[in-house]
Length: 414
Length: 120
Image (cartoon, rainbow over all chains, first blue to last red; front, side):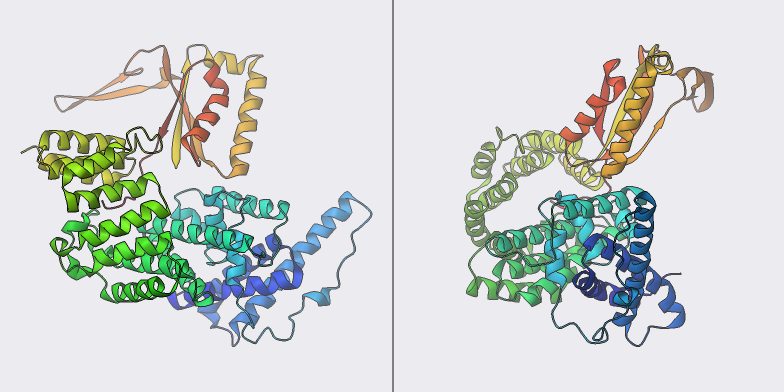
């Protein structure tokens, strides 16, 4: 049985609320999360057949609490078998629905859950997997399919992530400052990874991965609604919308990638462009500047150009100079070099790229070869450009990128 | 990122693994497999039958030709593989270095191609 799109949206929106109620009431994040997941699965099977209950939230809380009771009871039974000094068992009445389950939540637990799932004891892939399950309400099977690993592998990864949080003593509270700011920064990074994982997926067989993009935007919207004054949250949401806007134009129907300069801009999602541009304009006017806002501002300049040739490259260059100071890293330098080339000519861009040759983080990365080839092509050195595209094509581990780079090289061979 | 760890055997590897010394080696294999399962890094893996079971197929001027035995005689042959999904190439190499076969023949660690990609 498959839940319809409407049910899926409702379940995903309710997942963090239900989990929040359970963790507040019973503690034990790991056990509560399992119980909520089971309740979501039960709902996905029952609701399409029997109809959505009058209070879906209370229904989920009741079912999840019952599962939790069962689980804790069997754990106690096991312990009792192992150790005759049985642990004190809480009364079953403790698991009955509490008054107020029918009411909408007095506070939103989404942010607290995000902060918990993005616990610093976990690696970024584990933070991402746990966030998708506990906050976004995806099933383990869906997450496994998005990351192209067996379901058992993903189940193990999620269960281990929860154990790590338990071992690290992660509690269901917002940490105090300054840790709070640091943890929020990790949450934004995980949402950014979630978006990218979905966005880089090609069309066709990777539809599950495209769902990650949708979830990343939905969760970032939720965080933005809770922290409207935070410029970086607004910047990240704007960056996602301004990037997602180009999705319809980014590849041919067969999955072949299309460079930004060659995309059919009439296919871009204007509603996303407008929303993203408004968000970033407001953030830049009111909040302290940060890397997500700068990246969003760059995306907005690209998106507002009616054609590639109308792009305001001097403005983009100025933004990259700020970004290179705020968040220096080799990937920023690569894009910065393209902007330099567009304003000051390809040789100036190549000079900036040359500073990366000794940088072991990127010296053997296919993107360095690809950008260098692009600038060499601009400079009219077609033989060197062709070699560069070929080198990049050999180095990439992405099939669509390899096809794109080989096509670039072939275009210069005529 | 997913990596394939290619396990190469030589003429004596299987004997070693099935002999007295092999018990400890197999215990090491089990321990690594458990660790990779626990950590959620294991994607899959298989062992291949002895190369004498190989059939090589060729198209000679469009006509199929099937011969018994491997396509090239070599001191080392592919004995099996593991696929792991790990955070870094360093971690994949670390797993390969601990795989007992690495003490007898080299291992290769190769990234898998991804169907996703970003426009440039």
